[in-house]
Length: 200
Image 1 (cartoon, rainbow, N blue to C red):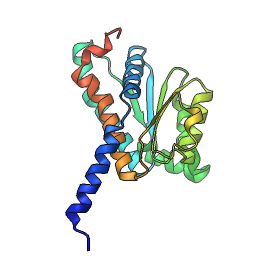
Image 2: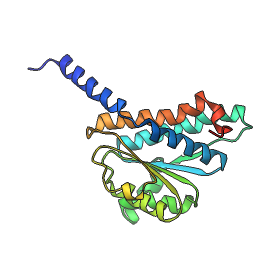
Image 3: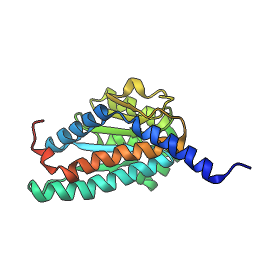
C-alpha cells in the first residue's frame, strides 16, 4: 500500500509545476485590461461551472470588496462594477428550465453586457457549452473576452481575446492555479492602488 505522505509529496510537486507555469505576461495583460475597465467605468462579468463557479464567486467578492475598497479610498470613491453570473441562482434555474442549461450565462449577458464591457470565463475543460455559448455571443457583440482554461484548451479559444492556459488536466490543480491568477488580479489593485492612475 502506498504511503499517503508519498502521494501528498507527488501532488505538491505537480501543483508547484502548474503554479510555476502561470504565464506572467498574460496575467499582466489581464491586470492592464482590468485597469482599463475600471478607468472607463465598464462592467466585468465572470462565470464558470462547479469549482470554477466557486472561483468566479470568490474572485468577484475580492474584486468587488477588497480591491474596490482600496482604490476607492485613494481615488475618489469609484469602485469596480463586477458580477458573477453563476450567483444568480433563481434566474439561472429559470433559464435552464425554460430554455436550456447552455443558455444560463448567455441570456444574462444579453440583459447586462454592452460593447466595451468584459467577460472573464473560467473553465478547466474550455468546452462547457454554457461557457462557450456565452463567450461566442460576447465576442460577436463587442464584449472583450478573457478565458482561463486547462491544458485541453477546449472550444472556447476562438472567442477569447486573451486565452490563459494552465498546463495540466487535473481539475484540482488547474482550479487552484486559476484561483491564484484571480487572486493576482485582485491583489494587484489592493497592493498597488496606484495602478488605476498609472499610464504603465
